[in-house]
Length: 437
Image (tube, rainbow, N blue to C red; front, top):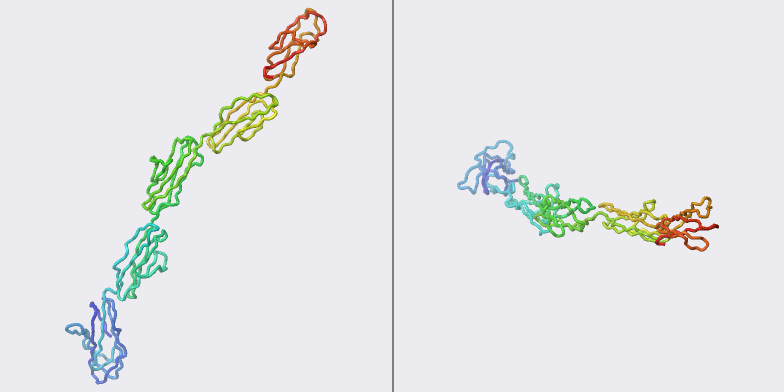
């Protein structure tokens, strides 16, 4: 058995046994041929044989060296001859030694650089090339997902999908020494998506101040946002933070569009905002009707689109919804204030109309100054006539019941004075008149 350290590549050797007896040996075992060894390591060669004799030494030479040089000079072996080798007479056993400093560990001579790609682009090829003897195997795994093998060979084809972003490891091994590995980082970028564009208040009123925000996902992250108001770029917002403040809004419809940008591409989303004015009830005119007529009250309003309108009879809890209120068989007791009220998210408004119900004079009463309705000839008595009416009584007339003739001038106040010129029984009647009826 021999040991030594070698720094050469390929050699041939001779093993020469110096005989002491004349018996021929028979080899039963020799070292592997060729013999692989890692440069810098010790090696051991073993020859086995059958021999009934003895030997007194062995010479081990490189046959490819010039001149030949002895590595092990005469070694005298005592005891059991099978420990190291057996005597072979003048026979020569040749062997070949192979040394290769590039075989172990395998060395990488080309590894793909880290890659940045765009989702949807053509697939990319990752490459790891290593030299070794024997030729090394290469396996691919994704770091760090355990030991699940993705593929083998110098190249690995990868689709450009976002879930393929990560670090990939190629490992090379040829059974000699320790396995080596290298990593390649792959980033799959994609344009902005999942765009969110929001207004802070769903009910926007004339003159309000609103905040508009925009956000999106993307790789790399979105670097700028742009907002357009009715297709006109808004320059007074915070484009990097995607926040805009809009003031003094008018009562119109607005179309806002947000555009998100990264180095891959853009995405956009539009939101429509209706700026509502406060509800408004326009002034109402008073209404005059004659008792027992029908009439419809109409409320003129603005300030939609979400608007509620109601009519209320102020003197009673009577209420109705809508811009119209229908009155039938109107009586004097329906007269009074009617209020129209409108409301929306931006405010309330109201206006009133007064219903005037006209009716003929009634409850006419005629009184005189005569005590117990008796008077003397030549006496001056007074008459007082009154009645209920709407509009009020415009004139009164005093008649003698017998001939229905007016005996005194028409009176606005319903009051007269008369001198009794003759005796007798006289029946007087008062007629009340208003202008419209």
